[in-house]
Amino acid sequence: MAECSLAVLNGPNLSRLGRREPGIYGKRTLEDISRGLMARFPDVRFNFFQTEYEGGLIEKLFDYEDGGSCSGVVLNAGALTHYSLALRDAIAAVSIPVVEVHLSNVHAREPFRRESVLAPVCLGVISGFGEDSYRLAVEALLKKGV
Ligand code: DQA
Image 1: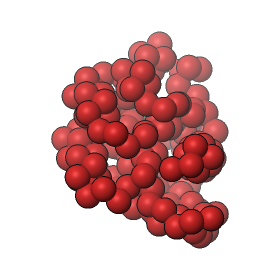
Image 2: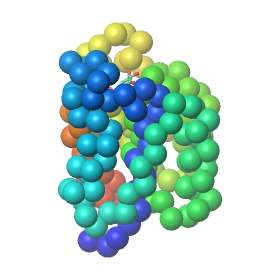
Image 3: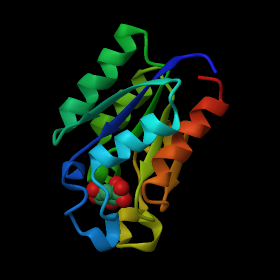
Image 4: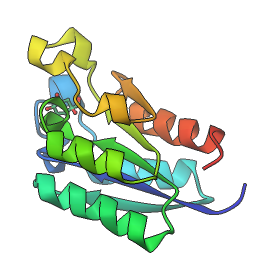
């Protein structure tokens, strides 16, 4: 497999994984998840980034677009998924394919989580498989030939 560059972006509150509502999000930290991806996909050059800020995710998407070396993005935008039109517009503004992921099954939870304003401008959505949601998103991007 050719070496390629994929970004894994995580938004608000995902820095707290491992101790944040473990019954819903599991006991693995973001660091554990990142290490798991690197071990699973040794040929992929990953760029991992987490921020509590909407604008941080938007800036990162534009940096990747301008840098020209990122061929796909796995994005867990946390609660921004459900209302951030600014993030949606940023995803639509870049040419990099973005896969929306969620650890939990957002459709089996509170009604407000069922709506994603990002999904229409993403390549696809993977939700409900815990840490495996990230792995499945990477596999999906690689299968698309990014
Ligand atoms: C989440 C689901 C969101 O509804 C929530 O706000 C999160 C995490 C998930 O990974 O299951 O912060 O994106």
